[in-house]
Image (cartoon, rainbow, N blue to C red; front, side, top):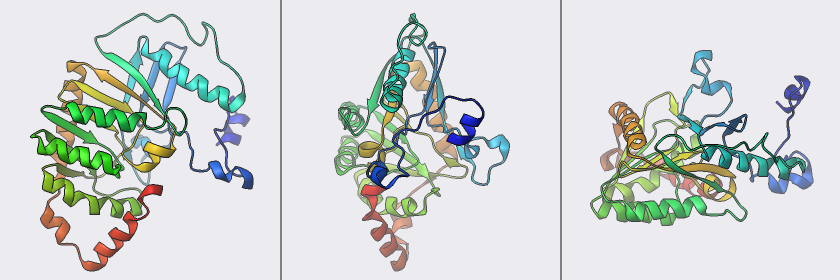
Length: 290
């Protein structure tokens, strides 16, 4: 894609390319952020990739559904800052001045804050934010993620949150685009179900949405998956948002997805064959790299 873009006259740079042998040590430190800023004034972020699979109108072989957001107001400058830092790191070119960072007036009711995360000084920000949100949840926690392999600390926090009487709903795809991920997820589910969490699986198309809504008030949107790669290795970007109206809209989207989903039960998990359990357990061993 880099060659094709350059042939088309597009200025493009690669973030930590790892084709050369000496650069292979950076192969797992990828930039997973999804940031688009137009004229420094309009921003877009969420889970959508720029690829054929994410465009259902093109009838891709493996269709992907996702959720993306338009951002207006001062929060756009935070998206632009995250891009500028990555661009400077990659190209040594600094993006400064009103062309890149125009004055932005507050608009809309949503209070939001950009949260960069990565294997640098921003390490564990998202992990800590999720733990903080779960610790103060009072009524309901709703999670949608395509990859669900959270750390032990988050698994424990989810279990304790449910044990406190908070409704915890987690929606994951019934069939993952990565087979080993599909298998590795299963062994951790019985513990959560026993503690009161509700696990649902969504039918095709593969749901790539990344969303966390707490108490119909606070939401976390952006690029982070609930897996070790996103939490520890990737450079990610999210927005935490405080607004009841936005949360209500997101709850409606979640309700629509849950209406089509299937509840996972202990009986379903225990009914697996012995070879399937061995396969899933073996896949679970690779979870730090998934």
